[in-house]
Length: 230
Image (tube, rainbow, N blue to C red; front, side, top):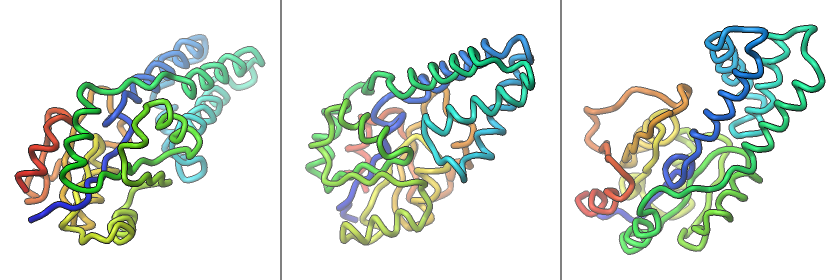
């Protein structure tokens, strides 16, 4: 089998992301300690995020709105203007966090470019994803950039058709079972799972160990060797 298209996730695959969301969540927990136990705040925020995904989509802006909504639910009439201001400030800090690449990203992208077209497939807020890509300095290393609202099997089917490859000639690599791995496999592609610490519970899913097109990697730098082996 010859792989012609290599799709890569961005957040927590090429650069750190969840560490910044987790730090912002901890800041919210500290702000709301006068109104709720820490675990209550975390559980309420997760529930709020999940409920709001269909309205706000993925990304830091939707997360900030969910933090404010969580504060409204927990603080009630005691919610102050200063607390809302502090939450908005935490959201702005999240939107402006530095882009920190994982080890060997540049070398890995260079190696992958000799194996097929390399396309970035990431979801989230368009402006924020574009700004992170620009800050990363990686943009010119991709044959294409696809920023989508969500990743479903039909998303990958459309991308494969757009780049003129059959599904079994494509690989998707990323850190999310829910968004990167399982929908790509369902679309008929190969998939490389690169788990990261601190992953968002929403992105968890079943590890498809029994699938012949699935492989788990310790790090992104191992991807070129696996692609060559297909």
